[in-house]
Length: 368
Image (cartoon, rainbow, N blue to C red):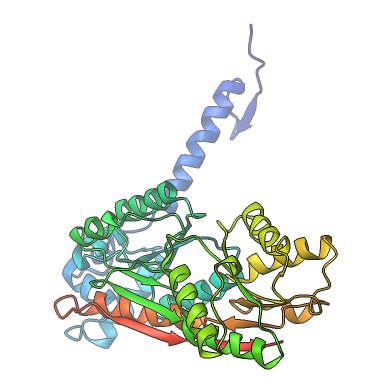
């Protein structure tokens, strides 16, 4: 097969005799252009200004030993020559990558969206970049994210564990690599770690008091998986809240869900099939509440009449819905996240003076 030829002339000379030659010329021009756009080095700037490379380096970093005039000359030349700092060398010298990792169960939940916004703002003010990963409550996926963050040498990690996480060997592995991990919201039940959480009991007591003040005595709890510390906290507060109001605990009114739509509907169905079904339900979070309210409505239950609901997390869109729950318990995700970020950056800045910190925010019932 023959190749078609194209003739080009410049100054009376044949420069390209065929399409192949033409393409080779194009590649050559691109390579020349790329070479011209290649960022300059400190040595090249020094040679241009006829000063030492060390002087250029100090001037670019605003070292006090370099005069203002020289510093301005160096920076102007660096800009003209398209100079860019060698980030790898900087990271190696400072032993920092100026990145932190954030691992959350799901970025789509409004709760975690509020948290990540606060974290990014906090990190950005300190010239740090945030690398995010969502576990989707998959323990293996969560571990892979952590391993990836470790390989990328992030300076630290902020984390809310997934509902299926039951092994915390990764904490030691990260610490051995000098990568501190600070937990918030959904945290391991361990004492020697940094953890920021919300005191759920306060909100639960307020919720049960609100139900009782409106005449409810049959109050149920749709709880999360037993493996979660947050589920245990809800359960204990629920039982104590009932007793504070002289209501006997009935284990038929305590059901669990795996937090999937099917699990939520199954939990609600157990309550609806009781001969003396509850008139008030406290549910694990707003997404569980959305599922169980829909399920109840499809079975002829009149929301906020036959059964009243109170949830957790204070979903921001409740106010736009026709039949929102009676209330929701605010857990302050933005404040939890900001406090977690503060603790992490304090650890990064003061590595030698470290003691695990625990901080607890009190939850609060918000009536719709």
